[in-house]
Length: 216
Image 1 (cartoon, rainbow, N blue to C red):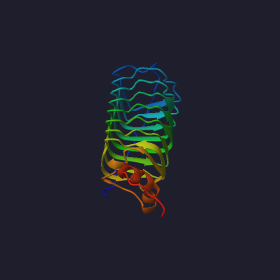
Image 2: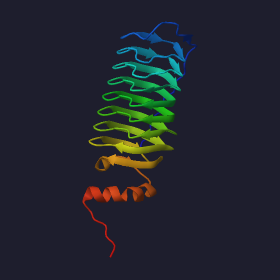
Image 3: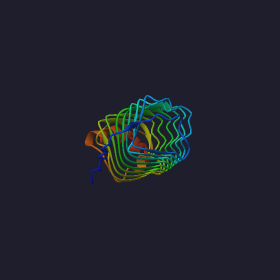
Image 4: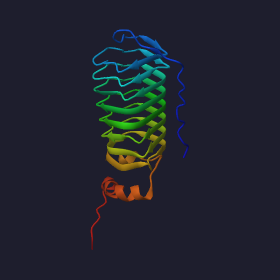
């Protein structure tokens, strides 16, 4: 089992962002977005490099195909944030409160998600490499058709996860508690779980195998 490589984000001195709304295909370098209401804005295709987003509101914000590089997002919150086909590389997402975030078809590399709660995270057909979920709560995340390589769940609640058609390589699920799978238990090859988790998953595994367990 190869461990995930965590991001090592070292932000330079940042300039406060004093512009208006986000712009599609905008270029944001070395900026701090603090307590900004970005709800409903269109930053599709934008590039964020060496940026910090702190306490920002991201309800229905469009960041489709955006590139977020060497950046830290702290305390962001929002419902329906659109990040489909986005690229997140060397990113820390800390204490987020998000719901229905669309990350399908996205690429995540060296990303740390620490603390917070994310409901209904859509990662279908995405690619995750060197990603760590630590101390967070994930409710019904959808990894359907995704490729996960060197992904770790550390002190993380994983509730109702969907791994249908996913491909896993060096995925460490031992730190997920609870570990609840809605679908895709047959796709866990390439992951590692604990003995206690194996017992918890026994009913799901038996159902997948068509195995009936009856007392004498």
